[in-house]
Length: 104
Image (tube, rainbow, N blue to C red; front, side):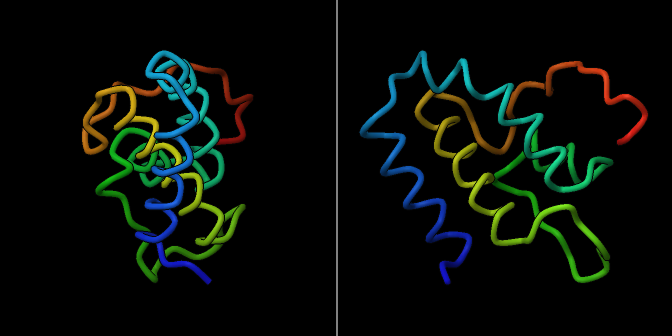
């Protein structure tokens, strides 16, 4: 099993070699929404979507829709896309507005 930093490194290699800056920029808002949902929404979801390099889930968080391993893979992809797009992964643009249908 890979650690979070190893997952980020693998994603950085894949995205860095195969994606253009424009492709990465276009995908960031979509991945922000996906990560928000994966974490379970709320404050932690927003932190993962807008500050993925600094985000964490502590042991007090009970149940999440996805495992920490899956969340860290998506987090790694978002960090890699941000770097490819020339953005700071500790301070991404606000997540796009979307209707959550009262679920999150």
